[in-house]
Length: 348
Image (cartoon, rainbow, N blue to C red; front, side):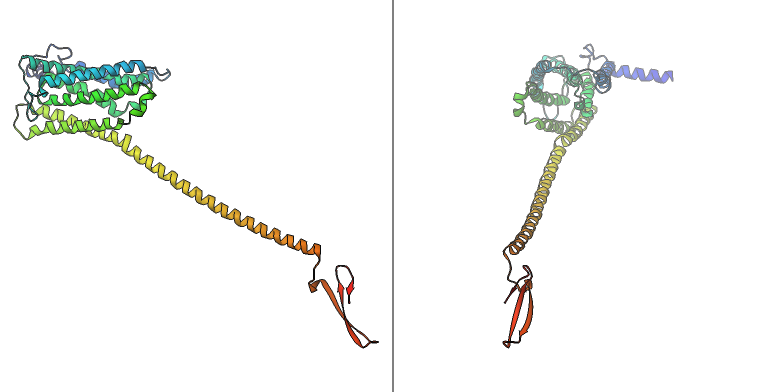
């Protein structure tokens, strides 16, 4: 067992010391992956467990001014990183088809390596996005996608800086820094307050932009599986599979946040319209019933009034009289007598 452990450790040291880029070995956090891994795990634990628990019985912090300055810093920092990617290679010297890593110490190669390290370090700074959510008690914003995306990136980029700081896979950094310029500009505007909200209709397009970014990274990375290029195939798979993972995570988020939400909104609107139509139909039916009842009551009342009027003014109908026939013998004539039932009188 001890021999096996020793063999694993010797292999690990060989990879770290002999297979990595010697130019970065002495740079901060570049000696080995354990410090970065520990920071990422601590971030995930704080985001999902410790942070919400500490804030459970506390009021949310008002961090609007802090967030304005933070987002402004991120816009400037991301713009600088994007510029460094361009001037160090992707602005004209690098090939989008196949770009090996330049491990020399010439100024441009070193500038690209330092830019990759600063890009790696920026992933720790972005942990502040989640910390702000925790301190403001916006726990519903701390989604699985959010934690995975922020928590895995420093570890992923660490391997790139340690073994291939530059070259083909740095294309991801070029795209990602551009997306972050747009994204943190949106966050900066949103932090300015309600007056700016009407101009932030393009929020959902940020997620679409991120998905486009991952598709471009996939195509750019996996093309090296079909052509000869002096670039490590392990990093082709590493960066390509990360792009696949994030694409599907962001697509699921987009469907949940926008597509399904829009469908629910349409369904709710249709249900409300159907309820309104049904309500109108019920009202019309009730109005018809009320109208029929009113007509029936009016007819009955009119009949009652007619009856009362006839009783008041008298009647000429024969049924109101008794009729008797008698013979008067002295004149030889027959007389018919009507006796009024109402007054007890008679007519001759």
